[in-house]
Length: 115
Image (cartoon, rainbow, N blue to C red):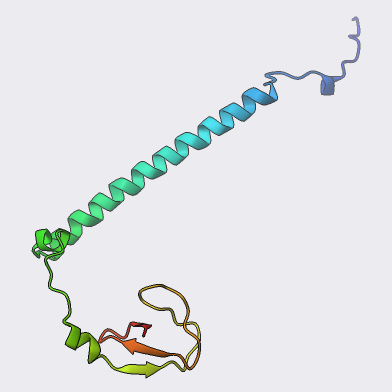
């Protein structure tokens, strides 16, 4: 029986893909994953919107067209002025954090905003 010459199997590479093609394949796969995630988010948003309308049958037209009346100036002026004693509370309008000791207006829902 004849012996075969030893082969350095580490030097033999099968299915070698050039690095540029590999990078393109990865980029394309990531792109399509992103597209699928965006589509799923949109489908989920539509389902949530549909479910909210089923659970809470209100006049959605009035909400979309901003026909809900605003608070009167007298009502806004009557809101209490509260001195802030806690840290890490944000303004409900500009989202900046208040400083301790700062005076704020407090709405009935307990949201606060700058004077």
